[in-house]
Image (cartoon, rainbow, N blue to C red; front, side, top):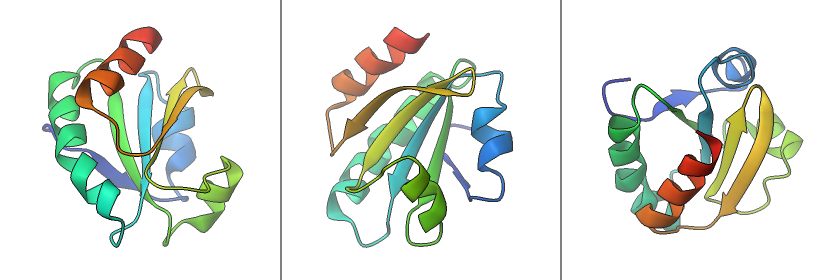
Length: 108
């Protein structure tokens, strides 16, 4: 991962997230979304800090509307936490790094 969130699509969502042995944080975003842009550097920092413990991936909702719809994403950014292939938490909106770290600690 080298400290950056990995961009995935609906084609590899199952492999990268649901079948992952590592807990995953999925950022549902779009390039035109201001709050998505503001939270992106924080997510890249977390990807580096939690590199060996959490997989951080990004799903562009414009390119992958099916995956977004499957998880009820109606606003972006929406961050969904997965562990063992199951959704365990969700945060909508641009939140602080501390809030994201607290959520990550709960799933680890």
